Image (cartoon, rainbow, N blue to C red; front, side, top):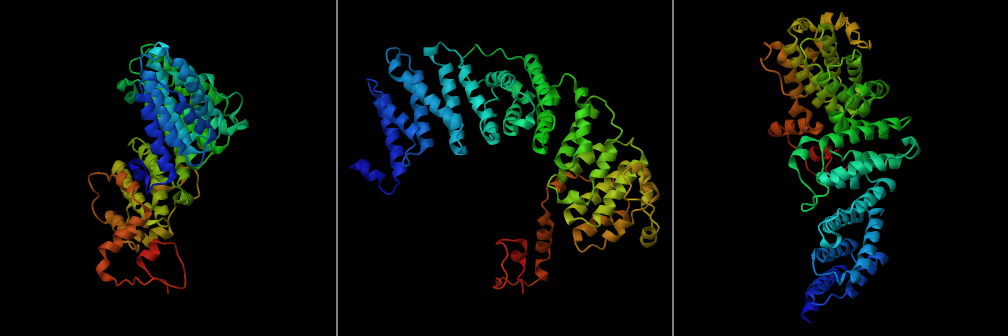
Length: 494
């Protein structure tokens, strides 16, 4: 009677979960092992009754089997649950291939816990169940799109034993043929490779999924590096004719996982340059980032890279969520004080011209950027002249010219900044006044500006000027706008 009372007010599913846990505890604590409750749990895992929470059921089975695997006195009882364990494993693999992401993540967690339990179990003499890990990866690669689940699997590749085996299986399970023929499988495979992190943080941590097992502690960086390079050669050979989503993922894998450990980095030069010149948006940005790494670490020169970077700054970029990354990369590429003045002058003019027609956030960034470039290249300070109206009329700068060194920017002026001083947004106008005074000694830090949301400038302005306005908070009845919209938050429509 007391137990029933404890179930009052809870759903039938919650009651069944509590019952399962109680039954599991009773079974594990019994002096004589009875597999009957366990068989019922597995039946529910197979049949999926609506009143049984499948995630709770998998969690209960995890507790049962990890406890059974730890026991040293089960030799005589092993036959009673060994077949049930095998059946459970098959059902868990089926859940990993499920269309329910929540169930897939739970099944993955339970499977990795059971692998750990098996590897530490005296019943199997401490052998690492590598076949079970491979079966998990086969399902993840060959099933529906599994990017999020594979990202979750990345938590386990931080362990060197799992990382070592995953690299081995990535070679064995690589898709055959061009990726364009099976884009989902290719995306899953690339997502797996993107979890194979040979970075210093992982290697120095020296963590293992199975602490007591010695048979798979033979991890060496050089062997893993060679396999990773072989994986990359397979990827690049299969990337003919792929769509933009796959192309972007290939570049992500290259930059994050392959390039720092590449045996022949110069070999990716053509791939990066083709990506830079044939695509816009995120693909071009990723290629640009890769090119910068090669220029910095391999001392490779790319004569056309600044021309492409210059062309990437156009009006459409400011509707692109990757624009902050573009600003960041441009700041890095234009850091050198040894660049030709006519090249840097073209970027200064391009930023000034775009600032006239950009959102406030972007205008402030470009104004600060211009100031930084004038500090790096003092010869460009001659662009600050006196009569903005006359300079606007006679401006020789050709903004339609694609080659920055041919734009005549060095013979121009920054009349645009004088006009920006009259901008309706005080933050933009104040930023542009730097040309009225001696230039600052230190460059502006663009980092905080790149993280600012577009609406923050407007919100900050309202907060600073709040006493000057009387706002009505009576909602309009004639026109509907989205709730919590910036307009409806501050104004009424009439």
